[in-house]
Image (cartoon, rainbow, N blue to C red; front, side):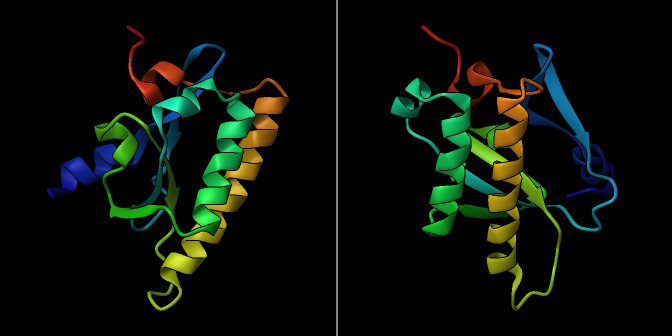
Amino acid sequence: MDPAHREALKHTRTIFLSDGQPHYENLSALPEMWWVSVKLSIEDRLLADEELMDIVADRCRAGDCKFTHYDALHHQHELYISFPVMNCDQGLAQRGWVMMVIGLAEHYRMEIAAGRLSVDRDYVFGPRT
């Protein structure tokens, strides 16, 4: 991956909306871009946004998640929720990343409950037909 593409990915669209608009995060402080992604099912569309964050945490606890370098799966495929993680010690990387994502899911659950964020359901689940 060329350096320009890597740099562009550090200012990335999340799966969230803020005031009805897509939410972007500046991830330039992360030395390496890694992502933990959880696959959803089409039936998960029926869940509330807070419940989707619970699903992310539960699936991460169960080890039902994927790790990718630089490319978040939610940018490429429907039915994925991805969170960025830091490149930590390789021996503890995946376990540490899962714990970080569980914490992020709990944080975003509180942000959703407080009305500051919502899940961009069309972006995550694809356009409704």
